[in-house]
Structures are given as structure tokens and as C-alpha cells.
Amino acid sequence: MTSYDHGMSAKKTTSPLRPTDAELTILRVLWDKGQATVREVHEDLSRRKPQVYTTVLKFLQIMTEKGLVRRDESARTHIYRAAAPPEKMQRSMVKDLVQRLFAGSTQALVQQALGSGKVTPEEISEIRRTLDALERGD
Amino acid sequence: MTSYDHGMSAKKTTSPLRPTDAELTILRVLWDKGQATVREVHEDLSRRKPQVYTTVLKFLQIMTEKGLVRRDESARTHIYRAAAPPEKMQRSMVKDLVQRLFAGSTQALVQQALGSGKVTPEEISEIRRTLDALERGD
DNA sequence: ATTGATCAACGAAAACTTTCGTGGATACGC
DNA sequence: GCGTATCCACGAAAGTTTTCGTTGATCAAT
Image (cartoon, rainbow over all chains, first blue to last red; front, side, top):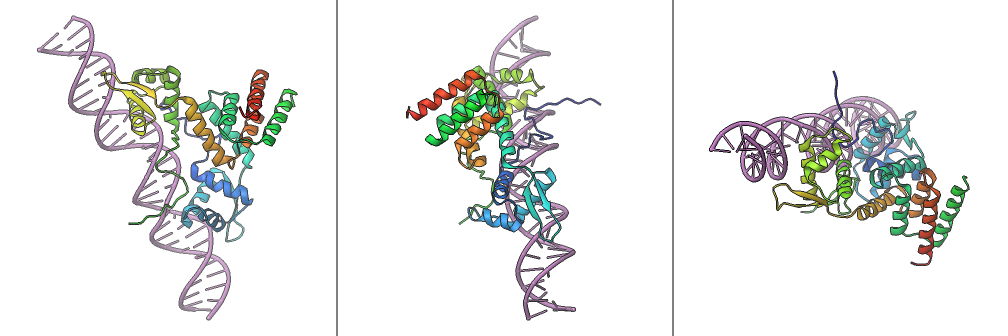
């Protein structure tokens, strides 16, 4: 029983954690708050956009299954927190973008970012320091 | 007839053009070749992964509707090209990622990229030059 | 205890993305 | 001309993501 992989959208077994839009929206709240109940996430999000409570709940449940968040079920009101710190997700998603859109060139992405985003003089100095450290081999 | 926007996944009228995975895969080929027929795109992609011709065709059609690509229909065999140059898409997608994952901080993304990706000494020098130019206000 | 509020679970509909089969039209070689 | 190959259009099925209504359980206050 052989079967070959057709298709171009490298899906399946999304190991390098790529959250969907909605999932990322919720993760941002959890990273911000550290931890939160469904209601807290719901209220936070509702400040910007009307949200339906059960929709938020459903996502938290799905994300728990996927391992994106952890939950404490010891009390009736479950408490959620992101499974990984934002830095880890950032690394993963930046890497992904570099591969898919910059042919693997980190430098190309950095140039593009610097060229189009706003960066303050202080931030520029800090980036320079990072470059120094890099050259020094840490 | 009023209607309010619920939901958290900022969909609908995807103005800042965010191509799907499959769409991006095809765009890469078009950027690389400049222009191509469906067959050419299909063959190019098939070198890495088996592809079904009509699947590629379907995407090119959908992408034409979305405005991601343009096509010359003057001959029976249509010729496709990306609607925008890669730089534009890169800018758009980097900006999007900065907003969604780095709280709007371009610097945060740059630091993360430098910290986790491979960058050669020459590339570091080039980034420095870009930083100089930025400080100089161009 | 009964009522009303709050919460998790479940499931299904809606929306979107991806895949592909079929059919009709045009070109090509004989 | 006739059959074969190539190409586009159409549409539907399969897969994923997003949305939300409903149900049953728990809790708090009467």
C-alpha cells in the first residue's frame, strides 16, 4: 500500500508550530497576562472587537489539544497559559517566514524589515551591539 | 440593515494581500521565472514534489481573481506573472508579522532574526551599512 | 430545594483552502 | 478530415479553520 505526497502546501504534522490567526490572537493575550480564564481572555479581546464567549472557549480547547496552551483544571474555572514563551514562537515563525519568502536568507528579511519599519536611533544602537556580539562569536 | 463584526481572525477583504501557503509557493516560481505558463509552473514544482496539473491551474485562476497574478490571455496558452514584485510582498508580510507577533516592534523582529538565523560576516557588514544609512536619514 | 448565573463540553454549520476529475475547445501531426 | 495531445473552465469533494448554539454540570443566593 504505497502512497505519495501530492500537493504543495506542506501541511500535516505542523511541528514547527504555526498557529492560525485566531490562535495567535489568543496567545497574545495569554503572553500578556501570564495566565487567564476563558472569561478574562474573552473580555480582553472584546475590548477591541465583539467576541462570542463560546468561540473563545472553543479555541482554548482546541489549542489545549494541539499543545499550544496548558490548562489547570483543578478548579471548576480552568486557568490557561501559553505552553511556550513568545520568544520561542517568534523564533519559529521568523524562521518559517525566512524559508518561505526570503529563500532562507535571514539577512534579506532583516534588510527588508529595517527598510520598511520604523526604528528609533536607540534601537539602531542596540542592533549594532547585537551585530558586534555576533561577529565576536558571542 | 446593520451588522457587526464578530470574530477575531481579521479576515475578509484581505487588502494587505496575505497569500496562502500554496499561493506563495506558486508566486515564488513566478518571481523566479519572471513569467510562466501553467505547464511551466507545474513542471517546476513537480521537480520537488509530484503535482497535479489542474491543481496548479486552479490556483493560478484563483490567484488571478484575487489579483495576486496577472495573465496574458491573448494566446491560447495563457502566460502568468506575479502582480507585485517580491519586495512588495516581503514588505507587506514582514509588516504583518511585526504587528501580529512583535507588538509592532520592528526592532524586536530584527533582534529575533539575527539571534536565531545564520548570517555571514559579509552580511553583517551590509546590515551595518543599512543602519548607517538609516541614521543618516538616508 | 428551587432559581438564576457561570462554566466546560460537544457538535455542527459556515467559511476558507486545497485537491482533482471531467468536459469542451483549440492546436498538431498524419 | 481524424485522432491525439494540450489547455482552460467549471465544479465538486476533501481538508482546515472559524463561529456559535445548545446542553448539562456546578455554584451561589434565596
